[in-house]
Amino acid sequence: MTANALQVSGLMAGYTAEVDILRGIDLSVAEGEIVTVLGPNGAGKSTLIKTIAGLVPVHGGAVTLFGDSLAGVPAHDMVLRGLAYVPQTHNVFVRLSIQENLEMGAYIQRDKAAVRAGVERMFALFPSLNNRRRQPAGTLSGGERQMVAVARALMAQPRMLMLDEPSAGLSPKLVGIVFDKVHEIRDMGVTILIVEQNAKAALAISDRGYVLAQGQDRISASADELLHNPEVGELYLGVRKGLT
Ligand SMILES: Nc1ncnc2c1ncn2[C@@H]1O[C@H](COP(=O)(O)OP(=O)(O)OP(=O)(O)O)[C@@H](O)[C@H]1O
Ligand SMILES: [Mg+2]
Image (tube, rainbow, N blue to C red):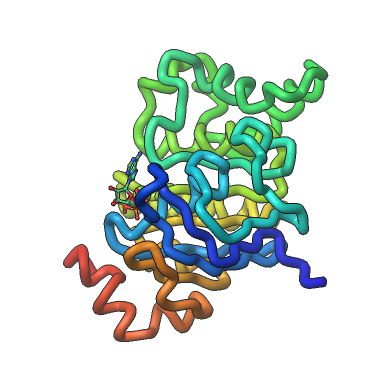
């Protein structure tokens, strides 16, 4: 058997029974890989991640995680399967402090000492949050919130982490910092699937990538090939934003 952490085959899914937003997606992420899914607004990137996370009804195809089917697994049990997910928006509890947000991420852990140890590991990974532990997450900058959201997801000690647009709304400097952290997290042994519009920054830390359009995977290649593929650049990458 292959060592794929995630295997998505012919996946069809949609919010209502009548409409398929995902129209047959094939994608895999090997254990220890960082894979990025690119594509224009409305391509179905968030829907793909939400479907894998058990939040959108599957109409066909299959998803397996570490060799086990995720069919019928409710979203709240995904964490028990080793899967954590950071949504595109509303990904922190704004009224709770940074530390409380992290503790929420370990809600399945009953051992208080293990939770405390996990919190300290996260403050070691994100030192800039350490002296603001008591600060409500709603008062943080976009980049800091993103770090809290990622740290909270990691509190469940997932084997696989999915990030939906981790760079959205961040300054170029913060984008670099967040992606450097994502790379560090992979090196800690976590397999990572990223959905992004900031193709350059995401591909720079990725092993491979997919380009999604209209609910189908159109291109699959190494990160390097995608970065240097003029057709991809013109159609889907930075050019679209006119910033690069
Ligand atoms: N909750 C929902 N109910 C019904 N349709 C939805 C819902 N969320 C998204 N859609 C539809 O699914 C399609 C794909 O949306 P999705 O959010 O997956 O795109 P995306 O690639 O993540 O876009 P973006 O880059 O803007 O985040 C769109 O046509 C959108 O209108
Ligand atoms: Mg999206």
